[in-house]
Image 1 (cartoon, each protein chain N blue to C red):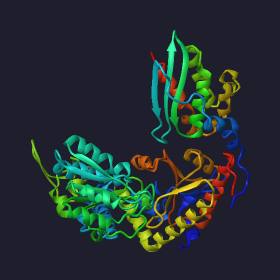
Image 2: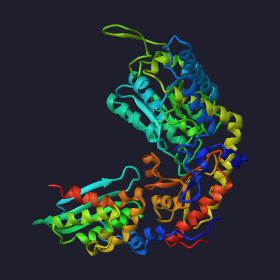
Image 3: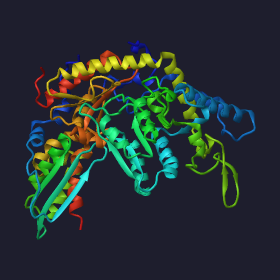
Image 4: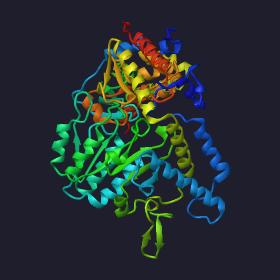
Length: 147
Length: 409
């Protein structure tokens, strides 16, 4: 049996913080009075998210999600909802762009404090097939904010 | 068991290392690797024989046609087809089933009729029938499965009371490895007056198949799951049924005479082979059949059963692992989950150790809903897998558990 320790890229991918968001997702469940909602899934692997937002005067007043899928997609959704509350739509879309840059391996994005807990997902950029998992909730956000 | 280490040497790709590790290829239900003999047959075809088939009057074209028709005869013999002209070359199982739905189905299934499939069918044996039923005002009836992943025979009987026009089911489930009692199901369906379509994608590579003994009407197979090239496959059918069916695709080769406003059609199987066929695929598939027959399908089946058995024994010793599917009557496919670790996370972690498994819904979403899971991890074996591959799988899985905080037993 192979008993060598998990390689560092894996330990970086599955950090405690990510597993914590996966197992104890924040802002999970339906949102009363949602003004925007978008359902997205990844047909290849079956990750699902239903993102619901209450937007008033161009500000995201509240946001919740319903979803199921891998640790990366669900942690990303949980972390995202933490960040979005009380942001303007334009601030939210800027965050989406920073998140996307971090997934492309942009190291300045990975150090950007505005991304909060999401920086723990920087390691996903080393696993190209998993980037779509991390970006699924963000794609739902940009879809929802389309005029 | 087979001398898998020796057979492995016949497969150039398996000598590669993945992520610095010995490649442990356990996604054979998705596609299989190709032996040198198949690669050589394809290259030789292009080096020595290539010309368009059933058209040229010159020797080269005649040799190409002979190679193509010899491949057809080889497939016919391999599954004991009713006749070589009952073997239609297709791109694989999916196209074969679409051919039956688009030709036999369109001609025979009408308003108020019923088509029966099972809840363990692959999407390729569900969606073509859904489309047909929607277009023709017919009803699709999905037969339930038992808790351990077999066709529910009592529900199958209830479905047959509707006197369906057509009954389709998989011989072997791609997601669970269940080997269905295909001959028994076909007999029951025939007694209810239905035509029987068997999805043979997962049975043809792994069991000795005899379509006449099964007594189905249509049998679909894929070459790439049995060491052959991608895009190779066949529909095996009772010739009298094929003969009476309307064409599927129109074009060259499938016609007899073309008038300004209508055409008459070629004999079977050519009536269903419009356009220049994939001769390379046919020749490659014939070489794959030669390779499989040299080893023997019964020995291959026994080898895979032993590997699957070992995998199930080792996996169930890991606390938190659930294995799906029946205890007996199964082929070399093992579907499992591990605690709350999502199968995609399992697949990523195993990949770092060079272990290739499939994670997802396995193109069987109705089945996943009934198992009450979004996805499973699936290891599937073939003749070149060794007991060491099973150990690599379980060893790597223990590591996945550790990353997610599961303590190894």
